[in-house]
Length: 140
Image 1 (spheres, rainbow, N blue to C red):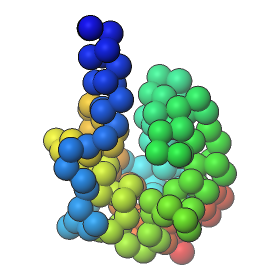
Image 2 (cartoon, rainbow, N blue to C red):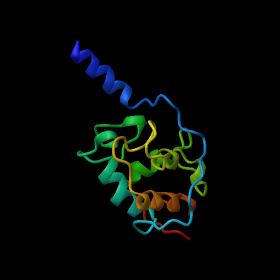
Image 3 (cartoon, rainbow, N blue to C red):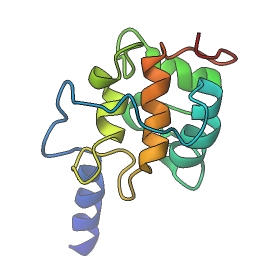
Image 4 (spheres, helix red, strand yellow):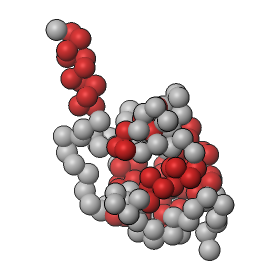
């Protein structure tokens, strides 16, 4: 019985009871933890906090939400996939990645558990605001 409850609980952990809103208000004047380029977003947040073996939701083995952050190219393609866009370049307020990472305390917050710091969320917001440029690019 306990094993069944554990399995059901783990299966539901990734399914929020309240769906995230389509858009939210974001602070574009915040102070980022690091320069908001994709390379820095990948190295400092996606790979270490979302796609590593330590936090395996989007690791090579995890693939939660159909996304892997195994390499920068794979991560960027997953985030900007036209069929399932998680990032809307130039529009962080309506980018699912921003809505979920910039909503600490909600049941749809990403990453689950400990939220990203405000400065880390700011770097993501500013990267998207700047056009969500890809690997090797910087904000124009």
